[in-house]
Amino acid sequence: MTHVVVVGGGPAGLSAALFTAKNGLDTTVFDTDETWMHKAHLHNYPGIDSIGGSAFVEDVRDQVDEFGADRHEGEAVTGINASEQRFEVLTENNEYEADYVVLATGADRDLAEELGCAMTEDDVVGVDVSMETSVEDTYATGAMVRVEEWQAVIAAGDGAAAALNILSKEKGEHFHDFDTPEDAE
Image (cartoon, rainbow, N blue to C red; front, side, top):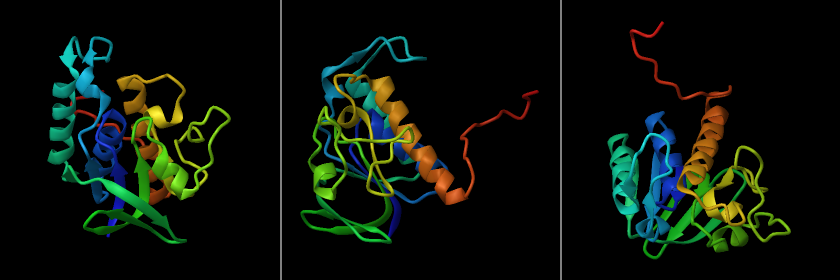
């Protein structure tokens, strides 16, 4: 069993996976490589002067892999069943169990709807500020929770918010992921 299953390999999903894996939670990512980032070029992402969307995704995948996430590229999630204590995540050939699910499937809201996540009047997945849906321990991020506010930096922030909330629940206190250099004052 894994702590966190992330469904989606764009900025939102990879950001969530980066934070959870970096901070010691077993993290499994299902990445069908269908991110819109392959059609993008970033000139508006803080700290990055200019980068192609595909190169950006590859860089973030490398980071996620370096922190030990179990990334399943090309394996699509076909369904998710929720019980009181865990989730069963289904693919064509396998079943996985998880404590938390982060949905980062772009504008495809099918899995969220099948899980019973509440939708807003704008037909996006309803979430709170931590990106948690109406289904406890299920998070939705990026384009699936926003009407036409589809930016890589916003999506990555949504993924980070979901991950920090999961980490806070696991640690039993508000969790902050700050790395401080030894020579900081």
